Amino acid sequence: MANVGLQFQASAGDADPQSRPLLLLGQLHHLHRVPWSHVRGKLQPRVTEELWQAALSTLNPNPTDSCPLYLNYATVAALPCRVSRHNSPSAAHFITRLVRTCLPPGVHRCIVMVCEQPEVFASACALARAFPLFTHRSGASRRLEKKTVTVEFFLVGQDNGPVEVSTLQEINKVGKELGIVPTIIRDEELKTRGFGGIYGVGKAALHPPALAVLSHTPDGATQTIAWVGKGIVYDTGGLSIKGKTTMPGMKRDCGGAAAVLGAFRAAIKQGFKDNLHAVFCLAENSVGPNATRPDDIHLLYSGKTVEINNTDAEGRLVLADGVSYACKDLGADIILDMATLTGAQGIATGKYHAAVLTNSAEWEAACVKAGRKCGDLVHPLVYCPELHFSEFTSAVADMKNSVADRDNSPSSCAGLFIASHIGFDWPGVWVHLDIAAPVHAGERATGFGVALLLALFGRASEDHLLNLVSPLGCEVDVEEGDMGRDSKRRRLV
Image (cartoon, rainbow, N blue to C red; front, side):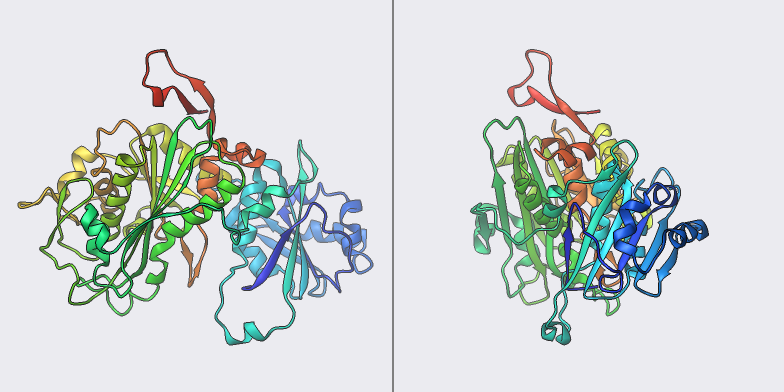
Protein backbone atom coordinates (compact mmCIF):
# COMPACT_ATOMS: atom_id res chain seq x y z
CA MET A 1 0.00 0.00 0.00
CA ALA A 2 3.02 2.33 0.22
CA ASN A 3 3.85 4.94 -2.43
CA VAL A 4 0.27 5.39 -3.63
CA GLY A 5 -1.15 8.75 -4.67
CA LEU A 6 -4.49 9.44 -2.96
CA GLN A 7 -6.88 11.87 -4.66
CA PHE A 8 -10.15 13.12 -3.16
CA GLN A 9 -12.62 14.25 -5.82
CA ALA A 10 -16.23 15.40 -5.74
CA SER A 11 -16.94 12.87 -8.48
CA ALA A 12 -14.66 10.03 -9.48
CA GLY A 13 -16.47 9.68 -12.80
CA ASP A 14 -17.58 6.50 -14.53
CA ALA A 15 -15.34 3.63 -15.60
CA ASP A 16 -15.46 -0.08 -16.32
CA PRO A 17 -14.27 -1.82 -13.12
CA GLN A 18 -12.04 -4.05 -15.21
CA SER A 19 -10.03 -0.96 -16.20
CA ARG A 20 -10.44 0.84 -12.84
CA PRO A 21 -11.08 -1.56 -9.92
CA LEU A 22 -13.61 -0.33 -7.38
CA LEU A 23 -14.33 -0.63 -3.64
CA LEU A 24 -17.68 0.58 -2.26
CA LEU A 25 -17.56 1.01 1.50
CA GLY A 26 -20.01 2.05 4.21
CA GLN A 27 -22.39 0.90 6.90
CA LEU A 28 -24.93 -1.55 5.53
CA HIS A 29 -27.97 0.64 6.06
CA HIS A 30 -26.12 3.47 4.32
CA LEU A 31 -25.19 1.27 1.36
CA HIS A 32 -28.86 0.37 0.93
CA ARG A 33 -29.63 4.08 0.51
CA VAL A 34 -27.24 4.58 -2.41
CA PRO A 35 -29.34 4.82 -5.60
CA TRP A 36 -28.34 2.47 -8.41
CA SER A 37 -28.15 5.46 -10.72
CA HIS A 38 -25.15 6.77 -8.75
CA VAL A 39 -23.05 3.59 -8.88
CA ARG A 40 -24.23 2.24 -12.24
CA GLY A 41 -21.56 4.01 -14.28
CA LYS A 42 -18.83 2.67 -11.99
CA LEU A 43 -20.03 -0.96 -12.19
CA GLN A 44 -21.51 -1.53 -15.63
CA PRO A 45 -21.21 -3.49 -17.85
CA ARG A 46 -19.75 -6.02 -15.39
CA VAL A 47 -22.36 -5.68 -12.62
CA THR A 48 -26.12 -5.39 -13.04
CA GLU A 49 -28.59 -3.78 -10.67
CA GLU A 50 -29.91 -7.23 -9.68
CA LEU A 51 -26.40 -8.39 -8.79
CA TRP A 52 -25.78 -5.21 -6.80
CA GLN A 53 -28.96 -5.71 -4.76
CA ALA A 54 -28.18 -9.40 -4.27
CA ALA A 55 -24.72 -8.57 -2.94
CA LEU A 56 -26.17 -6.11 -0.43
CA SER A 57 -28.63 -8.71 0.77
CA THR A 58 -25.81 -11.19 1.47
CA LEU A 59 -23.78 -8.83 3.64
CA ASN A 60 -23.94 -9.61 7.36
CA PRO A 61 -21.31 -7.50 9.12
CA ASN A 62 -20.00 -9.00 12.36
CA PRO A 63 -18.29 -6.63 12.82
CA THR A 64 -17.48 -6.24 9.08
CA ASP A 65 -18.23 -8.14 5.90
CA SER A 66 -17.46 -7.92 2.19
CA CYS A 67 -18.72 -9.39 -1.06
CA PRO A 68 -17.01 -9.47 -4.48
CA LEU A 69 -19.17 -8.04 -7.24
CA TYR A 70 -17.05 -9.00 -10.25
CA LEU A 71 -14.02 -11.28 -9.82
CA ASN A 72 -11.38 -9.22 -7.98
CA TYR A 73 -12.21 -5.99 -9.81
CA ALA A 74 -15.18 -4.74 -7.77
CA THR A 75 -16.06 -5.27 -4.11
CA VAL A 76 -18.64 -3.94 -1.68
CA ALA A 77 -17.75 -3.92 2.04
CA ALA A 78 -19.87 -3.18 5.11
CA LEU A 79 -18.69 -1.47 8.28
CA PRO A 80 -20.05 -2.29 11.75
CA CYS A 81 -23.71 -1.31 12.11
CA ARG A 82 -23.05 0.16 15.54
CA VAL A 83 -20.09 1.00 17.77
CA SER A 84 -19.68 1.54 21.50
CA ARG A 85 -19.66 4.96 23.15
CA HIS A 86 -15.85 4.92 23.39
CA ASN A 87 -15.42 4.40 19.64
CA SER A 88 -15.77 6.80 16.74
CA PRO A 89 -19.23 6.68 15.08
CA SER A 90 -17.34 6.56 11.77
CA ALA A 91 -15.79 3.18 12.73
CA ALA A 92 -12.53 4.68 11.48
CA HIS A 93 -10.25 1.78 12.41
CA PHE A 94 -12.44 -0.66 10.48
CA ILE A 95 -12.33 1.61 7.42
CA THR A 96 -8.55 1.37 7.36
CA ARG A 97 -8.64 -2.40 7.80
CA LEU A 98 -11.21 -2.97 5.08
CA VAL A 99 -9.34 -0.82 2.58
CA ARG A 100 -6.15 -2.76 3.23
CA THR A 101 -7.84 -6.14 2.82
CA CYS A 102 -10.62 -5.50 0.28
CA LEU A 103 -9.38 -2.86 -2.16
CA PRO A 104 -8.83 -4.67 -5.48
CA PRO A 105 -5.32 -4.53 -6.98
CA GLY A 106 -4.50 -2.23 -9.86
CA VAL A 107 -2.62 0.87 -10.98
CA HIS A 108 -5.64 3.19 -11.02
CA ARG A 109 -8.36 2.34 -8.50
CA CYS A 110 -11.45 3.96 -7.00
CA ILE A 111 -13.07 4.01 -3.55
CA VAL A 112 -16.62 5.21 -3.00
CA MET A 113 -17.09 6.02 0.69
CA VAL A 114 -20.73 6.14 1.81
CA CYS A 115 -21.41 7.90 5.12
CA GLU A 116 -23.23 10.75 6.82
CA GLN A 117 -21.77 14.24 6.75
CA PRO A 118 -20.49 14.34 10.39
CA GLU A 119 -18.33 11.27 9.62
CA VAL A 120 -16.61 12.68 6.51
CA PHE A 121 -13.53 14.03 8.29
CA ALA A 122 -12.86 10.89 10.31
CA SER A 123 -13.52 8.65 7.31
CA ALA A 124 -11.14 10.62 5.10
CA CYS A 125 -8.38 10.39 7.70
CA ALA A 126 -8.98 6.65 8.07
CA LEU A 127 -8.74 6.17 4.30
CA ALA A 128 -5.46 8.08 4.20
CA ARG A 129 -3.96 5.84 6.91
CA ALA A 130 -4.33 2.83 4.64
CA PHE A 131 -1.76 4.31 2.24
CA PRO A 132 1.55 5.02 4.00
CA LEU A 133 3.90 7.34 2.13
CA PHE A 134 7.29 6.01 3.19
CA THR A 135 9.13 3.08 1.65
CA HIS A 136 12.78 2.17 1.14
CA ARG A 137 12.17 -0.99 -0.85
CA SER A 138 14.58 -1.06 -3.76
CA GLY A 139 11.90 -2.03 -6.28
CA ALA A 140 9.76 1.01 -5.48
CA SER A 141 12.18 3.44 -7.16
CA ARG A 142 12.19 1.40 -10.36
CA ARG A 143 8.44 1.40 -10.89
CA LEU A 144 7.50 3.33 -13.98
CA GLU A 145 3.79 3.65 -13.24
CA LYS A 146 2.56 5.71 -10.33
CA LYS A 147 -0.34 4.05 -8.56
CA THR A 148 -3.33 6.26 -7.79
CA VAL A 149 -6.51 5.80 -5.78
CA THR A 150 -9.41 8.18 -6.37
CA VAL A 151 -11.81 8.65 -3.47
CA GLU A 152 -15.39 9.85 -3.86
CA PHE A 153 -17.70 10.47 -0.91
CA PHE A 154 -21.43 9.89 -1.20
CA LEU A 155 -23.40 11.35 1.68
CA VAL A 156 -26.61 9.88 3.04
CA GLY A 157 -28.92 11.40 5.60
CA GLN A 158 -29.86 15.04 5.82
CA ASP A 159 -27.01 16.36 3.64
CA ASN A 160 -27.04 13.69 0.97
CA GLY A 161 -25.20 13.66 -2.35
CA PRO A 162 -21.54 14.20 -3.24
CA VAL A 163 -19.32 16.11 -0.82
CA GLU A 164 -17.18 19.16 -1.54
CA VAL A 165 -13.52 18.21 -1.53
CA SER A 166 -11.31 21.24 -0.76
CA THR A 167 -10.67 20.34 2.88
CA LEU A 168 -10.22 16.65 2.17
CA GLN A 169 -7.46 17.38 -0.31
CA GLU A 170 -5.70 19.68 2.14
CA ILE A 171 -5.67 17.09 4.93
CA ASN A 172 -3.06 14.96 3.19
CA LYS A 173 -0.86 17.69 1.69
CA VAL A 174 2.36 18.15 3.63
CA GLY A 175 4.76 19.17 0.89
CA LYS A 176 4.37 22.93 0.67
CA GLU A 177 6.16 25.20 3.06
CA LEU A 178 4.27 27.89 4.96
CA GLY A 179 6.76 30.71 4.58
CA ILE A 180 7.40 30.88 8.33
CA VAL A 181 10.97 31.38 9.57
CA PRO A 182 11.53 29.04 12.55
CA THR A 183 13.14 30.01 15.83
CA ILE A 184 15.93 27.49 16.55
CA ILE A 185 17.92 27.18 19.78
CA ARG A 186 20.57 24.49 19.40
CA ASP A 187 23.43 22.68 21.11
CA GLU A 188 25.46 24.79 23.56
CA GLU A 189 23.00 27.67 23.28
CA LEU A 190 20.44 25.42 24.94
CA LYS A 191 22.79 24.97 27.88
CA THR A 192 23.60 28.67 28.06
CA ARG A 193 19.93 29.68 28.02
CA GLY A 194 18.92 27.15 30.68
CA PHE A 195 17.23 24.37 28.70
CA GLY A 196 18.76 21.67 30.88
CA GLY A 197 16.16 19.06 29.98
CA ILE A 198 16.61 19.07 26.21
CA TYR A 199 20.37 19.61 26.41
CA GLY A 200 20.86 16.90 29.02
CA VAL A 201 18.99 14.30 26.98
CA GLY A 202 20.69 15.03 23.67
CA LYS A 203 24.21 16.16 24.52
CA ALA A 204 25.83 12.75 23.87
CA ALA A 205 24.47 12.39 20.32
CA LEU A 206 26.32 13.10 17.07
CA HIS A 207 23.56 15.49 16.03
CA PRO A 208 23.05 18.14 18.72
CA PRO A 209 19.66 18.70 20.41
CA ALA A 210 17.47 21.66 19.54
CA LEU A 211 14.32 23.57 20.42
CA ALA A 212 12.56 24.68 17.25
CA VAL A 213 9.45 26.89 17.09
CA LEU A 214 7.10 27.73 14.23
CA SER A 215 4.82 30.68 15.00
CA HIS A 216 1.60 31.88 13.36
CA THR A 217 0.38 35.24 14.69
CA PRO A 218 -2.57 36.54 12.64
CA ASP A 219 -4.26 39.89 13.14
CA GLY A 220 -7.35 39.73 15.32
CA ALA A 221 -6.22 36.73 17.39
CA THR A 222 -7.97 36.48 20.76
CA GLN A 223 -5.79 33.88 22.45
CA THR A 224 -2.45 32.11 22.17
CA ILE A 225 -2.18 28.36 21.73
CA ALA A 226 1.01 26.29 21.94
CA TRP A 227 1.37 22.72 20.69
CA VAL A 228 4.48 21.10 22.16
CA GLY A 229 5.77 17.90 20.55
CA LYS A 230 8.21 15.34 21.89
CA GLY A 231 10.79 14.81 19.17
CA ILE A 232 13.14 12.10 20.38
CA VAL A 233 14.47 11.15 16.96
CA TYR A 234 15.90 7.91 18.37
CA ASP A 235 15.75 6.53 21.89
CA THR A 236 18.39 4.06 23.01
CA GLY A 237 17.35 4.65 26.60
CA GLY A 238 20.66 6.36 27.32
CA LEU A 239 22.82 4.75 29.99
CA SER A 240 19.64 3.11 31.32
CA ILE A 241 19.80 1.34 28.00
CA LYS A 242 16.93 -0.51 26.38
CA GLY A 243 17.14 -4.22 25.58
CA LYS A 244 17.48 -5.81 22.15
CA THR A 245 13.71 -6.38 21.89
CA THR A 246 12.55 -2.98 23.15
CA MET A 247 14.95 -0.70 21.27
CA PRO A 248 13.87 -1.59 17.70
CA GLY A 249 11.05 0.74 16.71
CA MET A 250 12.32 3.69 18.72
CA LYS A 251 12.57 5.70 15.51
CA ARG A 252 8.91 6.44 16.19
CA ASP A 253 9.66 8.18 19.51
CA CYS A 254 9.27 11.46 17.61
CA GLY A 255 5.60 10.70 16.90
CA GLY A 256 4.37 13.61 19.03
CA ALA A 257 6.51 16.17 17.20
CA ALA A 258 5.56 14.64 13.85
CA ALA A 259 1.86 14.97 14.67
CA VAL A 260 2.30 18.58 15.78
CA LEU A 261 4.16 19.43 12.56
CA GLY A 262 1.53 17.82 10.35
CA ALA A 263 -1.35 19.43 12.23
CA PHE A 264 0.35 22.85 12.26
CA ARG A 265 0.82 22.81 8.49
CA ALA A 266 -2.74 21.71 7.84
CA ALA A 267 -4.20 24.19 10.36
CA ILE A 268 -2.36 27.19 8.93
CA LYS A 269 -3.17 26.29 5.32
CA GLN A 270 -6.85 26.06 6.23
CA GLY A 271 -6.75 29.46 7.93
CA PHE A 272 -6.17 29.56 11.70
CA LYS A 273 -7.60 32.63 13.43
CA ASP A 274 -5.65 32.54 16.73
CA ASN A 275 -1.97 32.72 17.61
CA LEU A 276 -0.55 29.23 17.18
CA HIS A 277 2.97 28.10 18.09
CA ALA A 278 4.38 24.68 17.29
CA VAL A 279 7.20 23.88 19.70
CA PHE A 280 9.46 20.93 18.85
CA CYS A 281 11.70 19.44 21.54
CA LEU A 282 14.31 17.59 19.48
CA ALA A 283 17.02 15.27 20.76
CA GLU A 284 18.55 11.84 20.27
CA ASN A 285 18.81 9.92 23.55
CA SER A 286 22.17 8.36 22.87
CA VAL A 287 25.03 6.65 24.71
CA GLY A 288 28.51 8.17 24.86
CA PRO A 289 31.16 9.75 27.09
CA ASN A 290 29.00 12.87 27.52
CA ALA A 291 25.75 11.04 28.24
CA THR A 292 23.65 11.98 31.23
CA ARG A 293 24.22 9.58 34.11
CA PRO A 294 21.78 8.36 36.73
CA ASP A 295 22.38 10.57 39.83
CA ASP A 296 23.08 13.67 37.68
CA ILE A 297 21.03 16.75 38.57
CA HIS A 298 19.78 19.01 35.78
CA LEU A 299 18.45 22.55 36.04
CA LEU A 300 15.47 22.86 33.70
CA TYR A 301 14.08 25.96 31.97
CA SER A 302 11.38 26.24 34.64
CA GLY A 303 14.08 26.91 37.23
CA LYS A 304 13.46 23.59 38.97
CA THR A 305 16.10 20.94 39.55
CA VAL A 306 15.66 17.30 38.59
CA GLU A 307 17.63 14.32 39.89
CA ILE A 308 17.99 11.73 37.13
CA ASN A 309 17.18 8.23 38.32
CA ASN A 310 16.28 6.82 34.88
CA THR A 311 17.80 8.13 31.64
CA ASP A 312 15.10 6.24 29.71
CA ALA A 313 12.48 8.60 31.14
CA GLU A 314 13.76 11.34 28.84
CA GLY A 315 10.61 12.51 27.05
CA ARG A 316 9.24 14.27 30.10
CA LEU A 317 12.53 16.18 30.49
CA VAL A 318 12.45 17.69 27.00
CA LEU A 319 8.71 18.41 27.23
CA ALA A 320 9.17 20.12 30.60
CA ASP A 321 11.47 22.62 28.89
CA GLY A 322 9.04 22.94 25.99
CA VAL A 323 5.96 23.75 28.07
CA SER A 324 7.98 26.14 30.25
CA TYR A 325 9.09 28.00 27.13
CA ALA A 326 5.49 28.12 25.89
CA CYS A 327 4.37 29.57 29.19
CA LYS A 328 7.21 32.03 29.90
CA ASP A 329 8.29 33.15 26.44
CA LEU A 330 5.23 32.65 24.24
CA GLY A 331 2.59 33.70 26.79
CA ALA A 332 0.33 30.80 25.87
CA ASP A 333 -3.21 30.61 27.23
CA ILE A 334 -3.56 26.98 26.17
CA ILE A 335 -0.63 24.55 26.18
CA LEU A 336 -1.06 21.09 24.69
CA ASP A 337 1.83 18.64 24.70
CA MET A 338 1.77 15.45 22.64
CA ALA A 339 4.19 12.58 23.13
CA THR A 340 4.95 8.90 22.84
CA LEU A 341 5.66 9.16 26.54
CA THR A 342 5.06 5.86 28.36
CA GLY A 343 4.72 2.19 27.53
CA ALA A 344 2.18 2.10 30.34
CA GLN A 345 -0.20 4.16 28.19
CA GLY A 346 -0.96 1.09 26.09
CA ILE A 347 -1.88 -0.79 29.26
CA ALA A 348 -3.97 2.06 30.64
CA THR A 349 -6.02 2.95 27.54
CA GLY A 350 -5.04 0.36 24.93
CA LYS A 351 -3.70 0.34 21.38
CA TYR A 352 -6.39 2.51 19.81
CA HIS A 353 -7.08 5.22 22.41
CA ALA A 354 -4.55 7.89 23.34
CA ALA A 355 -4.47 8.93 26.99
CA VAL A 356 -5.40 12.48 27.96
CA LEU A 357 -4.40 14.18 31.21
CA THR A 358 -5.47 17.77 31.81
CA ASN A 359 -6.15 20.35 34.49
CA SER A 360 -9.55 21.08 32.93
CA ALA A 361 -12.57 18.79 33.08
CA GLU A 362 -14.08 20.67 30.12
CA TRP A 363 -11.04 20.06 27.96
CA GLU A 364 -10.89 16.42 29.02
CA ALA A 365 -14.44 16.01 27.69
CA ALA A 366 -13.55 18.01 24.58
CA CYS A 367 -10.60 15.72 23.78
CA VAL A 368 -12.79 12.63 24.09
CA LYS A 369 -15.48 14.18 21.89
CA ALA A 370 -12.95 15.37 19.29
CA GLY A 371 -11.45 11.88 19.19
CA ARG A 372 -14.80 10.28 18.42
CA LYS A 373 -15.47 12.84 15.69
CA CYS A 374 -12.11 12.43 13.93
CA GLY A 375 -11.26 8.78 14.62
CA ASP A 376 -8.14 9.50 16.73
CA LEU A 377 -9.71 8.06 19.87
CA VAL A 378 -8.90 9.42 23.35
CA HIS A 379 -9.65 8.28 26.91
CA PRO A 380 -8.92 10.12 30.20
CA LEU A 381 -6.24 9.32 32.75
CA VAL A 382 -6.58 10.06 36.45
CA TYR A 383 -5.63 13.68 37.21
CA CYS A 384 -4.79 13.85 40.91
CA PRO A 385 -1.45 15.58 41.57
CA GLU A 386 -2.02 15.70 45.33
CA LEU A 387 -1.94 11.89 45.43
CA HIS A 388 0.52 11.07 42.66
CA PHE A 389 3.23 13.73 42.41
CA SER A 390 4.93 12.54 45.59
CA GLU A 391 6.21 9.63 43.48
CA PHE A 392 8.96 12.01 42.28
CA THR A 393 10.25 12.99 45.74
CA SER A 394 14.01 13.56 45.82
CA ALA A 395 16.29 14.09 48.82
CA VAL A 396 18.66 16.37 46.89
CA ALA A 397 16.63 18.08 44.14
CA ASP A 398 13.16 19.46 43.53
CA MET A 399 12.13 16.12 42.04
CA LYS A 400 13.35 12.93 40.40
CA ASN A 401 12.46 12.17 36.81
CA SER A 402 11.03 8.68 37.34
CA VAL A 403 8.51 7.33 39.82
CA ALA A 404 9.27 5.36 42.98
CA ASP A 405 6.32 2.98 42.47
CA ARG A 406 5.67 1.89 38.87
CA ASP A 407 2.35 0.37 39.93
CA ASN A 408 0.87 3.75 40.87
CA SER A 409 -0.62 5.13 37.64
CA PRO A 410 2.73 5.70 35.90
CA SER A 411 1.23 7.35 32.79
CA SER A 412 -0.59 9.89 34.96
CA CYS A 413 2.57 10.52 36.96
CA ALA A 414 4.65 11.07 33.81
CA GLY A 415 2.19 13.72 32.63
CA LEU A 416 2.17 15.38 36.05
CA PHE A 417 5.96 15.71 35.88
CA ILE A 418 5.50 17.88 32.78
CA ALA A 419 2.70 19.92 34.36
CA SER A 420 4.79 20.63 37.46
CA HIS A 421 7.12 22.78 35.36
CA ILE A 422 4.37 25.29 34.61
CA GLY A 423 2.79 24.78 38.03
CA PHE A 424 -0.34 22.93 39.12
CA ASP A 425 -1.89 26.31 39.98
CA TRP A 426 -1.24 27.78 36.51
CA PRO A 427 -4.50 29.51 35.45
CA GLY A 428 -4.33 28.47 31.79
CA VAL A 429 -5.44 25.24 30.12
CA TRP A 430 -2.86 22.42 30.03
CA VAL A 431 -3.53 19.24 28.06
CA HIS A 432 -1.19 16.24 27.85
CA LEU A 433 -1.74 13.54 25.22
CA ASP A 434 0.22 10.29 25.50
CA ILE A 435 0.05 8.59 22.10
CA ALA A 436 2.68 5.87 22.61
CA ALA A 437 0.51 2.94 21.48
CA PRO A 438 -1.82 4.37 18.79
CA VAL A 439 1.08 6.13 17.01
CA HIS A 440 1.90 2.86 15.27
CA ALA A 441 0.20 -0.27 13.95
CA GLY A 442 2.72 -3.06 13.65
CA GLU A 443 5.83 -1.60 12.06
CA ARG A 444 4.01 1.27 10.36
CA ALA A 445 3.25 4.72 11.75
CA THR A 446 -0.42 5.72 11.76
CA GLY A 447 -0.15 9.52 11.70
CA PHE A 448 -2.14 9.59 14.94
CA GLY A 449 -2.64 13.05 16.38
CA VAL A 450 -2.89 15.19 13.25
CA ALA A 451 -6.64 14.72 12.85
CA LEU A 452 -7.13 15.02 16.63
CA LEU A 453 -5.48 18.45 16.84
CA LEU A 454 -7.32 19.71 13.77
CA ALA A 455 -10.65 18.57 15.20
CA LEU A 456 -9.99 19.75 18.76
CA PHE A 457 -9.09 23.27 17.61
CA GLY A 458 -11.33 23.27 14.54
CA ARG A 459 -13.41 26.19 15.78
CA ALA A 460 -10.36 28.44 15.37
CA SER A 461 -10.17 27.43 11.70
CA GLU A 462 -11.77 29.18 8.76
CA ASP A 463 -12.65 25.78 7.31
CA HIS A 464 -16.28 24.69 7.53
CA LEU A 465 -15.55 20.98 7.88
CA LEU A 466 -13.17 21.54 10.80
CA ASN A 467 -15.76 23.84 12.41
CA LEU A 468 -18.25 20.99 12.12
CA VAL A 469 -16.12 18.42 13.95
CA SER A 470 -14.80 20.76 16.65
CA PRO A 471 -16.13 20.30 20.21
CA LEU A 472 -15.46 23.98 20.93
CA GLY A 473 -18.15 26.63 20.84
CA CYS A 474 -18.13 30.15 19.51
CA GLU A 475 -16.35 33.02 21.17
CA VAL A 476 -18.24 34.63 24.04
CA ASP A 477 -17.39 37.64 26.13
CA VAL A 478 -16.82 37.04 29.81
CA GLU A 479 -17.89 39.35 32.58
CA GLU A 480 -16.48 42.86 32.56
CA GLY A 481 -13.37 43.28 34.70
CA ASP A 482 -11.65 40.03 33.76
CA MET A 483 -8.07 40.08 32.57
CA GLY A 484 -7.46 41.20 28.99
CA ARG A 485 -6.20 37.91 27.69
CA ASP A 486 -9.29 36.23 29.12
CA SER A 487 -11.69 38.69 27.50
CA LYS A 488 -12.68 36.18 24.86
CA ARG A 489 -12.68 32.41 25.02
CA ARG A 490 -13.81 29.69 22.74
CA ARG A 491 -16.18 27.95 25.10
CA LEU A 492 -17.02 24.28 25.01
CA VAL A 493 -20.49 23.42 23.85
